[in-house]
Length: 254
Image: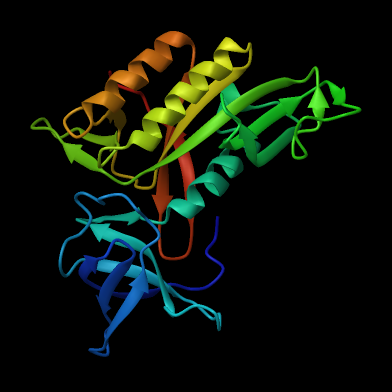
């Protein structure tokens, strides 16, 4: 995935009120950019770290900059959670996640869940036929084979004493993430496939693990979901100032 506009470089100053980040430009001017990530961004908020931003040309937007990348050590890390689903879709269509290949339809933001109030990031579907009275406008088929795919963007990583860099999720306690695991288990109970895809927007990681030290309830929930039949895939990315792409599957360490 190429960025539609070239990224401007600057230096990270501070993040505040969740959605704002101050950046020092090479000119010496400090500008405020929109932060597209509601997580804690643990390990990514280093004063003076290089950042990549896009200029926003939209009259209705108060902030004229959008934060996309931060450099942690020697590695660019993608902080924009909004690109995670398109990246995973691109990887699925390119055959980089074999377990999710072969589905003729890929639909995003489809309603599902025990109460019908949740939205799945990606619904993969094949076969079946269009229903006379479809239950869902965005998924009007019946008798089709489905995979419900939930995507999580991952920026947090830690390095062990033996030099192994591990991507981890979440970087803060997440009740919402735990709810998604329960929804996927319900999907399995209904006879469909369900999968978590963790999109690690950084290239220095070699494996993935749930961040039990940050949110033990989520780690427990993930293990329960896997035992229940929910699948899990982890992909790391090559990130740069012009583009980002998912490159390979990583092992999950439980």
